[in-house]
Length: 454
Image (cartoon, rainbow, N blue to C red):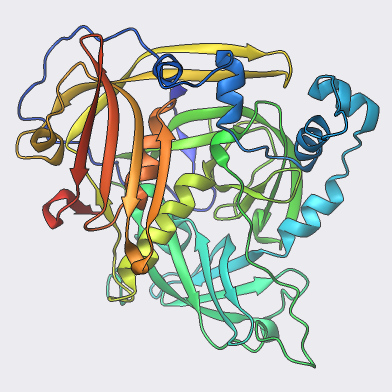
């Protein structure tokens, strides 16, 4: 994953605030880490195949054509034996209109007014959940779309609009405005959630067929360099529209100006060359199957062209769900609670692995602990500087049902995704390498192990 420091224009206003770091009280020193990748340890557990085939098995195909290829390969009566590119040459013809039409049904135009200012903030949003029987919806957008530091500060949430309307594609007229309210958000991740209740334009009746739908997200960690993508949003404030591009860089960390003017924020990003303009913020970046790949949030300045950014859907929607779960008890308040381990990590090594069958270069990183803070979950569990993280398994019993998800930490943002999912009382089991040995450590998150998202 590349890290980029640049002056990037969040596409309506400025960004949000700087991400908070761990407080390192001890075990912050130079170390010698094990030279081991997650694949190496997976093979010790009985996984077979080459590094490229193993990495491929961890990812979910992100296009319909790729899925058809996998099905063709796995047919019992003798499947397709060629590579993915050979399959495309023989059978594949992509048509972007279906992807755009699918994505457009879940994207809304967002207009925000703030008392004390004369201008609207014009952005976009993506429908996260939709109840057509009640006419209710939850919409994900960027925090900087609804926040304006020039406001009076006397809003329900200071500087966040109390006057928000959203519009469906094809119904972008004042008479069809859908009133929305700010449910909550995380400024440091540039994500906000809007709430719509009892809207006649979202309520399905015999007389009113609702074509709007909630977005279907893909696994953004499986994105491939060069994938065809479509950005849908309110470009220029002129109404919802679509532009086409490719994934220019599948994993990057970019730094933006903070929305409140205090410092910067650093976010995981997918880079695209799709033409992004003011107003695209909060809209969707969709793959060729019409699935949500990311939430558009910025573009480069300083005469740079063809460099736009979207927060990966795995991160953006994990933040959104975190906010929804937390704000349900306290509407219209900043909320969201991130499980913290109390460690700092770095990428000790990174390699590219080329798979001839899929035609993809996979990136695998070594994620190593640099430091462990005192009086932290990681300290109690026995983590130490120099440990190489291999995998993490989240176990939960929320809602009376057991839930388990294991993630190999081939990329540092995979840990962030899992921590955003964790709730009070959940357990996370880590597999790590120390001194040539594989160890297993477990953390059960208590109230002291969470911090409120800024």
